[in-house]
Length: 377
Image (cartoon, rainbow, N blue to C red; front, side):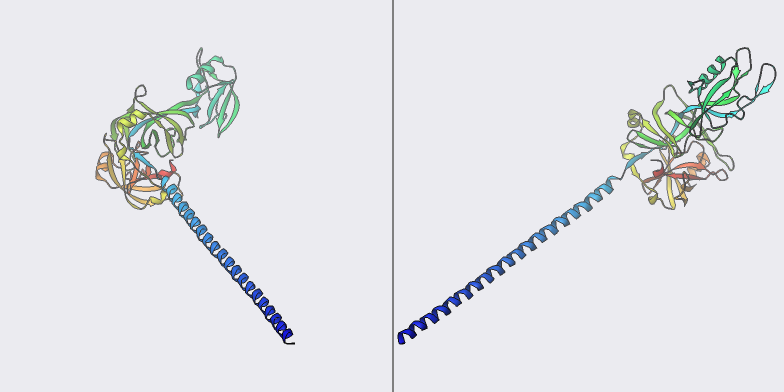
């Protein structure tokens, strides 16, 4: 029995020892699982931190690139103020008006009355394209009094009409039309951007009708200033000048739109007459404020900066965004205020080109209007 007890006791201790080993193993497993889970959590935290840092870097780069992009929109140009000759070739032959002609029998007729009108553009005669007054005259005379078909453009739409010219002499016939195929005048260059330019601040319009001219081409020329007719109340003055068409071409006109004339300049002319150090920042309507500003002008042959006062701002206007008053006695003495030919004169405020002169107020020529420079781009 004693031996059995001993054996039994041995068996009991062995069983307990086995159970202790299993508990210990389970404990180790729990510890290992815990360490594994803790390690995974640490790794996840590290990855999360790195990802956040990466996004933060991307955000900073994005903000930086946006700032760079915003700054890259800044543009510097050379304000001009130079009087120039502007020549515009019409797109078709412009009808100024109809008129009465005397025929060979002493009668009075107006062949185009009620058929063509002011503002039309003659584009063809009997199917032949026409671009000049001479072409119109020659084709009309060749008809020998027979009815001709005139193609004309009105409000952008081409139509046709049959007209019988009036015989006014042995071999001459007339339509009874006052027509033009080009227009020219003195204006002011607003700014130069490398070899591009903008001028005038409003469209080139026909002097007799006030209508904007549809153009296909044109040129800008050096102008010789002969004198200035000063403005006075109810009598706007003008710059008198001559344009040397044969020798003084300095650029070409690409566009003639409501906000001005744009085109390309001869690079050698720009290098000779303008300095890169004259560049100023091209402003926006948001940069404009009431108060002191300057008109840049080269009427005298030298760049002069004349003080003005911006008295009203119209953000919804077309070419009359600013109302201004000339306060500089030098300009008032020279021109009486604003004169015809000063259209396009650059307006500088806080060292930024913010606009250009467009109109004079007839009642008070020291007052005028200007356009935002952003509307001329």
